[in-house]
Every structure is written in C-alpha cells, then in structure tokens.
Amino acid sequence: YGGDNVIDAGDGDDIVETGDGDDILTGGLGQDILIGGEGRDVFIYRSADESGAGAALRDVIEDFDAGTAGDSVDILDFSSFVTGAFAFLGDETNAFDGGGNTQARFNDQTKILEIDADGDAQVDMEIELTDTDGAALDDSDFNVT
Image (cartoon, rainbow, N blue to C red; front, side, top):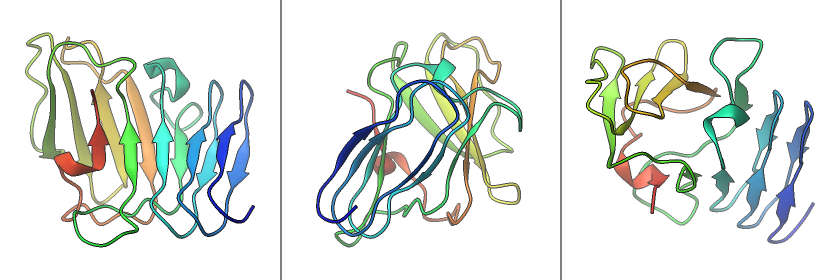
C-alpha cells in the first residue's frame, strides 16, 4: 500500500505491510505481524488481549522506529485500555510496582515490550519490536490518552 493508510485487520493471525506514508494499523485479535514501512506509523491496541504474553500469542512489529527526533518516529497507541496512569519504566531490570497503573518495560536483548495493563505487577501483554533500539524507546513512543 502506498500513501497514508488506515488498516484494521480484525480477528485472526494477520500479516499487514504498508509502504511509505503515515499509516494507522490495528492488528486486532490474533497473533499479528505488522510492518508499517517508512513514515510516522501508529500501531493501535484496543485491549491487552490483542497481543498476549508468550511467543505463540504476541504480535510482532518489524519496523518500529522509536525516539523523539525526525518525522518517521512511530507510536504505540494504548489509549483504549490504560488503567490509571501510564509509565514506561525503561529496561527489563525495572520491576512492575503493582500500584494499579499500566506500566511497560523493554528487554533490548529479546526485543520484547512487556506491558502490565491492569497494574497487578504481572505481564498481561507482549509485543516484539524486532528492529527497535531500546535506548531510543521512551514515553514519547506511546499514546495513552
């Protein structure tokens, strides 16, 4: 697909790839592979169930461009399911605090983003960000409002 696309893949295990442009991709339920291509892409998750925990359940985003500079920085949109406040904790050495708020942390070795969606200090959701540099990932890569 060329240009700015809006794609909702629905239920099922999908592979969605877009080209250049500022795209909005929603994988929906199932284990999805999402490839936004060039441009500032938004990956929307409406619930933690849309990307489960574990290799057989989690989505893969192959080209998530993290960071704050440039016009091709991508966004993970969790605004539909955030509980309380949201905090990106940084790397996997930071523990979820179980304080009732949504938190996320990233393992730069495995490229897995872990999310505690309901604030109970347990991993509810994982997304594999295969080409992401953990040092570049920060709060600006998330839309939570």
